[in-house]
Amino acid sequence: MRRLGYLALEQNDILNAKKYFQESLTFNYETGDKPGVTASLTSLAALAIHLDKPVVAARLYGKVESQLESLSINMLFLDQGELGRIRNKLLTTLDEAAFTAAFAEGWEMSEEQAIELAERVFGEGD
Image (cartoon, helix red, strand yellow):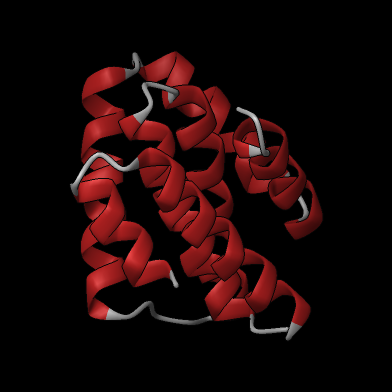
């Protein structure tokens, strides 16, 4: 699902990108796949960047980095590349103080809080 979301995002098909990313997040969360949840949050951070919501992206990015550290996992190559692009975009979009504050907020979020943030920002009808 996540890969289909990235393809839709590349075509600027926001509605389908959002749908695929959310389906990926829901599936991974419900099945207890922590690396999958982390990758899904990465995809939603990419969507936030695309929709010019850098603070949301920075929060999600902070949670992703926190998950990677706490779970001692590596992401798939494609997801690693996306994570690098998100970081670079955030560092050129937000000033240091705004980035640091949003990143720290995301770092401290629980997985459920990050999912709730994504649902609130990217929920149906958004």
